[in-house]
Length: 115
Length: 114
Image (cartoon, rainbow over all chains, first blue to last red; front, side, top):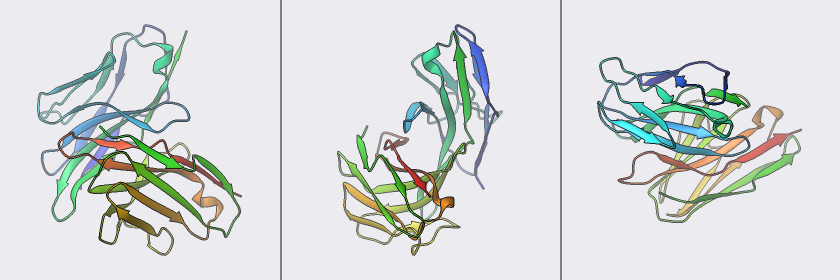
C-alpha cells in the first residue's frame, strides 16, 4: 500500500542555516505530494504541494520538488528563521478505487530554530 | 481554500463520559474527514464522512466508539464515546476542496481524559 517515510527529528538549527527534511514515498498510482506545517498549539496548514513529476512547490521560502525517479519530495529552505519552528508533515494523496482520494501522512519532523 | 472551525477547541473530560466535537466549513464540500493525532505522533484517519450516507471507518475505529453525523454539506460532528485516558488526543477535521488539491484542516480539538 501507499506510505510516506519522513526524516526523523527533532532537528535543531541556528537561524539562517539551510534546512532539508527528507521525505520519500511509496504509491501504486500517480499521487500528489504535500508538505504541511503545524505550529505549536495550532492545526495543520498546507505549506506547499506538487501534483506531478518534476513539479516544484514553493511557499514562504520553502521548496520541494516532486522526483518520481527517486520517489522523493524533500523540503528545503535556504535560510531558516525562529518563526519556522514547527512540526512538518510530508503527505501524499492517491486515488483509491471506490474510496476516492486517500491521504497518507509521514510521522512528522520537529524543527527548532535557535537565534 | 476553505475556512474550518471546530468546537470546542479543548476540553478535559472524565472517564466514561462522551464528548461531541463540531466541525463547520465556510463552503459546501462533499467529503469531510476526521483524524486523531496522539501526543507526539502523526495523523491517523478515523473516518470519512459524506453527506447523506454513513461514514466510512478505517481499520481500528468503529461507529459505536466514534459516531459521526453529517447532516449537510458544511457541517459534521464526531462523538468520542465512553472515553478513557487513551482517547486523549487532538481531533482534527479536514475537507477536500475539489479542484484545489490538498486537504484543509480545522484548528483541532485538544481532548484530555482523566
